[in-house]
Length: 478
Image (cartoon, rainbow, N blue to C red; front, side, top):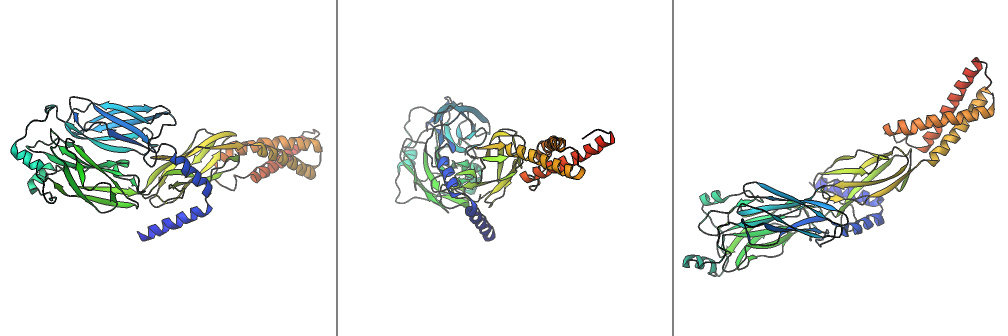
């Protein structure tokens, strides 16, 4: 592990040495000012199976602030009910919109998992949970028995740890972060759920991005008094400890953040007051990953010749624009909006701990193209690249003239005829070399302007000499 960290540090240092700091800082500033993730939040705590559940979806910056869409943005919303049935819908953010509200028909009682993602995975996704109360639940609070009132209102001098018989624990067990059915029980229960950015499996360790820690009160009616839930975490900070489910509410929430990457941070329920059993697991794991703000190109060219090939290097960067190694293996794609530029490879995986990844751009024609690099959850700012051909055309002419002169010096004849022929032959050969040969050749040596000059000279010399031999045999003056 130490060796991988050392290698990652060396990579990062090397990239920082040759990167353009100003360009990276500019990209970081621009990334802060555009949507970075999409979030999902239930509008109401009390939801019933007989009514649609209102859900709010919001676009947010990298620091969690609402931000308007810069272009039409389509997001997909899904709700996974306790049985595994999935309810889905889609929303379109028009330019200028930062929030949208929709309603989902959830027919099953219990805790359902909500998820929202941008359709092309260009933004970070988020998850959340919502509790749906059975339709048969009374709408007004009824008088509870003396025993139940005592259970929920009695104040204890200190919180108590949750204890359950092994058999009862097995009966209520659910996989962490999975939807859970409304418990069929004679008494209320609590349920722990952890969600948030990247479903809490890759929360950025920047001290701002958070995993959402929720404790749900599972009953037909809300509690008659506050319920306090103490938690213990192995790493990071909890915004509220204890987590409090207020009187009349069904859920209490805290935010779990970290300033350092942690592969598997663990949270455990330490106790509750009053003592109420948990349905499901009382532990949860969260992965705090590298504090990546965005992705960008280190050395995007603004102009290149038709015969050039350019190595494009991309990096993930933090809020200060510094290249940062990724903590996990990630997919990436280099994208060109036109066939003018061909990128090889155009997609691959970047290994965990790697600080950079690259591709080679091969022009196929003259014109303008936009290039960018994307990875799930991140997108770079498109860069314009202009492919030119005037210098290459000039080299073709020069090469044809030189080839014709060499042929004249070797075979004599008419100088003007050899020069004109050399220009024509050199231009045709250079055209075939540039537009047919080079796009299929990856050798960096051949993708240079000097190679075009050599091809034009050699083709003109050989062509003129061959033509002079033919015309001499046919007794034509040349």
